[in-house]
Length: 156
Length: 156
DNA sequence: CAGAGTGTTCAGAAATGTCTGAACGCTCTT
DNA sequence: AAGAGCGTTCAGACATTTCTGAACACTCTG
Image (cartoon, rainbow over all chains, first blue to last red; front, side, top):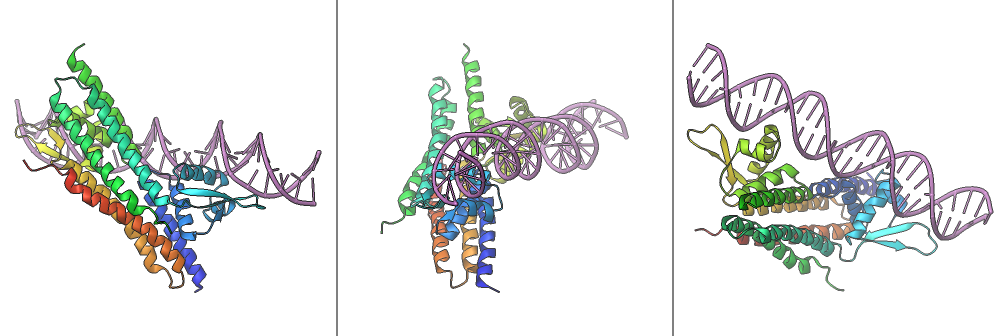
């Protein structure tokens, strides 16, 4: 068997799995697959190739890419003399991913804190329980924060 | 205004928000709402009351509860002389939640590692990129692991 | 300037996820 | 035994998310 063919099968399998993982994490499956493709390839991949190799319409690629760009996970490259857009993993994709998760836990904590503030004085017991819940999100946030430097690409 | 009414409004608002948070985290909205209700109430809540106060069928409560029990977030209580089941937050609900998230990141890492193992020798560059991806999940896993003791309820 | 190629948008189709109502097995009461 | 009340299951209704195809604006080429 060709080593190229083998790599192709492996890549497709990898992409499929990452799609599932993405959708478990509350993210569109397709965005996970685009991300996986870029991880696997390393080199810049053209917009049109993404659609072709993932067997999906250009419209879908467009919206998937918008999400990934918004989160700072990929970057768009404009090659001079080529009308197509190319894409590549962002420099600090993993740090960006962690920061995004962190923003989520912070937001959750803020929602709880907001409820706590509105509680009447008498509801001491409710307050204590909500504070425990908020502490949980706080601990997770702290953990993610600690992780950021560890996932950040060391400067070369 | 009655302080009880105010609490009721606050509770409903809290429950609604936690439903949204749950669904953002890739978990059924209803499970998040049941969880929120139990956090807010503190005391045991009857199966029937959950359905009534969340305006949802008993079937829905049954499946929501199954999920929460499987994840170790709540516990079921059988009161002698009462045919209804009651529910309460599990002792270490937040630790269980963290462990569940940890299991997810570990699984993701394992999927990547599995692909890495199958890579042919020649594909050094692909290997390096997948390893970076796996390291990311590894760092997050480590961070969550560190968080477990911090979210665990201190023994009284 | 006409034509081909690009990425984006959006209404609607398709797929997926979630909720319900009815049927069921169980236990307790009468 | 019969009946009432409980939690579970599952097919189907419903709602939401995700994908597509067509229309569009833009740019480059001939």
